Amino acid sequence: MLRFVTAGESHGRALIGLVESYPAGFPLSRDAIDRQLARRQRGYGRGPRMRLEHDRAIILTGVRHGRTLGSPITVMIENRDWRDDMTIELPSKRTSRQISIPRPGHADLAGAIKYDTRDIGDVLERASARETAV
Image 1: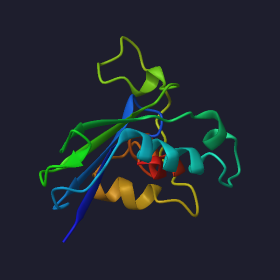
Image 2: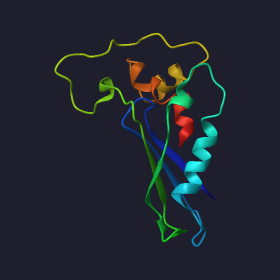
Image 3: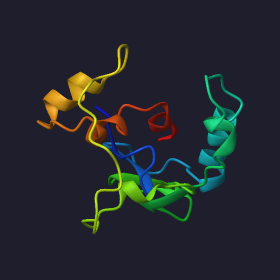
């Protein structure tokens, strides 16, 4: 059974995808993934975000000489416009306001409960359409 896990935030430094249990010996290239990412840019949405991002995949593990190894495959997609308020380091001053009211029709409340946080800003970035890139 394939297992697919994502990590990262929509305005963070990068998005990561990890696929486990993918069989060895199948062809896989960065170009093949990038062609699929380019298809995403022609998608529909409220804002221009999909058309602004020119995503490129970086295959980190699980592929050698254009073939899968059978070990976990990890792919990273860097965000070109990551925001300073998503920095990992503790800022010298608060750069963003705390969000305490979930947006209707979004996964904000479910994320806040799952990750046990009062600042919904911590989970907004995980409940984003940008996450679909991975």
